[in-house]
Image 1 (spheres, rainbow over the protein chains, first blue to last red):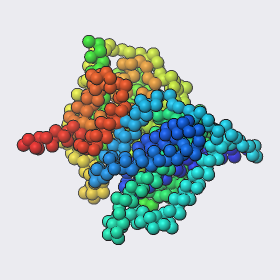
Image 2: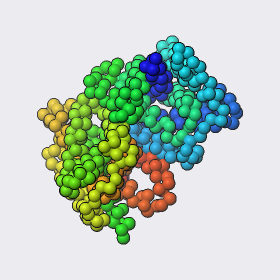
Image 3: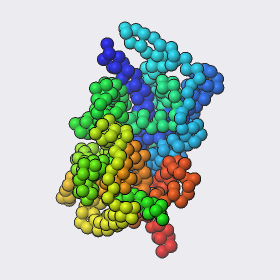
Length: 287
Length: 278
């Protein structure tokens, strides 16, 4: 039963990673940028969500506020950080992105204090359900539900709508897409908008799960998000989803079995390095 | 006076670290986001030796070799994965080092290693660090103009083309990783003996990024630029006390601004000014 519970916890984390990593894959697929600054978007979503929840007393308001704030920040980062340096070598954007991340992390610390804030009425955290000997709280259930709903919505968007088709066309061949009348720059903004809204909602969920929102909460999850998109094969959406769940489960079992040798973050990256040494193109990547 | 001596020593250590990374990323074009891990490997290896009673010069040498050997291992990884993949793998190496050290009782876990014997005085460490830094500057300038430096440049610009004209890409990549990480190991050994206390968090991801910031702000690939970048970033928090509280904010903003307006760093900026003046 214990092992089943570990599997479940792993899959729940996997769902959160998936929401974070999908956005990173979208950005990478379109622009070939490792968007580390996504962590900033995630943390901003969590802080704004927390402030909204504590002010209004409603978690629904928290999610809307978090998603709006995150959805505004992502496209702004694209406009003012990435767009001017798109034609430079790839490391330029990566270093700029890391710059945004560490500057903003310090900014959150100065604005909201170093120790983090907690939700005043985190009813989801305290409501627990037990079935078949396993205990889950409402946040964990919502994590899974939100991830499944949002990722399915994204799949429908990408395959069934005109905007989705335009987006996929732009990913595979930007100049050709443009000559068919697709606004490439519009697609890029929408891309950052979707990625950021997902990250913002994930931020509020992780804040609720730990009942704590702190300045550094985004960085580790963003590094793991990068590990996940590399693991899945850069730019591959199905690969990202598989890798997210796999990483969640590996971490969950790893923290139990390898506890004496490695910490949680090290297990994630060890898994990444081992997989890449065997399959340099990632789990579902193509050469 | 003591204060200036220790600032000068730290500046010299940072010059060694930054030049080491510049060999890997600047000369040979292999992005590394985990340079602090090798700094840490050198520090831990040298500290363990000294605590066990090994003489100081030998302990430093062991630190250099341990870091260099792990560098070769990561160099092999660089043969399997490229560019963005390599950036994430090297970042992973940093986290793996930290996560492993934190859990090992014989490495002191979270508490680190304390009471490391210190055979030199402040002036001695300053002389050693500055001497090593100058030696590395000379080596770096020499490598740049040598056959090896040109081969590094070819690998950095276009691996496949370099291979086509008969350059041993794998060999040069591994050499670059060995030289760069061994330099970090040297800095680590000196640091461990000077402070007599090392903890895992000194060698975290932020440290890797700080070293990268020195390279990038100085001008990636330019030896003199990187030296200037390392000295500048060491002195900045010392000169402007108020910056210390906002150190990461300033680093981050600098990284962003340099990438946005002068990706060649200080060296690139000077070159452009020079061209305009000429």
